[in-house]
Length: 353
Image (cartoon, rainbow, N blue to C red; front, side, top):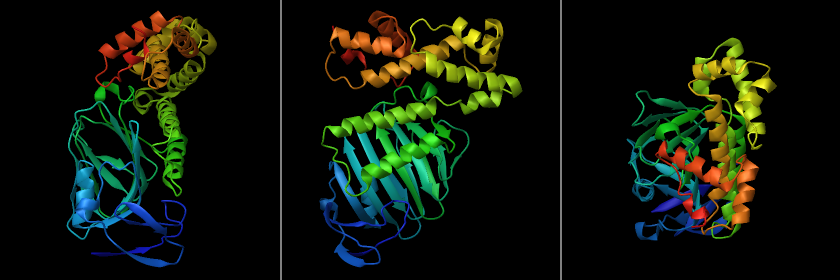
């Protein structure tokens, strides 16, 4: 089977070049305006365990098999083509995928991980098992889907997206349900980060720096999650919506102070605690819960780096830096929070026994 690789200048993939790959290994880079011919990989040449595959170009049966190795099934009524760059290592998998019109089905997984889809080009329809409506994904929008939920992603024309898979969802999903995020500056930052990581020369997933890239991606996701929740905005109107937004900004800034409490929040906003709690109740939450969840989220970012028990002084530093008065208080809060979450990562490895 012969594949003709044509450079696509100024394509959303970035760089204006595509690399020609034979048996999963880079052979040479396409120069702008040049055409190269290469043999497509056969099934036994597609290495599902490879850490880095740059410039993958497949079509029809072999393209279907490539998706199958990603635990996805392709449904297409016409000839199907895919171009992709992928990298995987240390609990993080990145993919930048362009393909022709199709429906991609993913079966539920057994892990506690998270898949993030960021639409780059073309519109897509996302049908997730826990939702009663089909979600629309337009360029710039993102969807967060827990591993335990199957989904179908459908397009009527060629489309491109970035896929990010994390081993743990870090509490980004409330009640383990899928969510969509509208276009936002933090999504653009995340997309630029992944594009840079996958563009030639791509990052090395086996290098120590890949763990820091994973931390950066998680932090950007948390930054987007810390923006005003869309669901809360829909429940609030006028001055209440403005107050709620200001309150979240203050919490993000001051929750790192161990002595920061609801009374301090109300004082800074120049409203009574009673009125503040009423506004948060209309948004479906409480000021104390948002303060606690913000501290938990920040603590999990630090604790997720741990593979072995951390020394006591380092845990004390983490606790203080995210707003807990002590390591004991941090651990108790995390344990309580875990009881109400189905997708909490295993942070206990960070604590000495």
